[in-house]
Image (cartoon, rainbow over all chains, first blue to last red):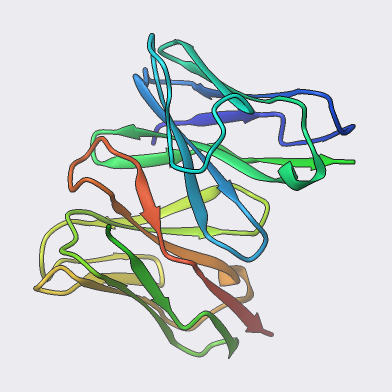
Length: 113
Length: 113
């Protein structure tokens, strides 16, 4: 199946700094990618839809200025958590659709201290 | 909006026992996905069902979609410790093949050796 690679798999950062998470489609082109967030013992919640060459579409309640999404090419979408705070600590995971299937990256565990 | 309800929330079984996890949708499903996740890690695609009455099997895991396409079940036969993890059902949010998925809250499976 298609491969979605996410990097880094985990990151620890200081409060107030920014962190960039990369999501790459390795063997296919993805005009659309999705970013999810997962809190402990909860399901995945969609944060935003990343569209290649245009602005991302954010879900209600997600701060677009805090979670910057860039989809500059057909194989790369990035999520930047700006001015991170401890409450941003979470598991972030990206996904891309290939026809009817959905493939997920390995996820990124962000810890803000 | 569509919601997916999974049951049970958690399950502890003895190795070798069979088990079933259910996923019920508030609306007709146009594509139902089953994933396995170990918390803090990426999602492993198990199966996707589209047609009413469809049934798919892979190794000891069988998934079914009911005729009305509002309920799916995941059945594991002769469970093993390697089956332990969180099982998530997901559905296309727009009924098509290109949108994001929405997820149930997951079922945590523990298998006692």
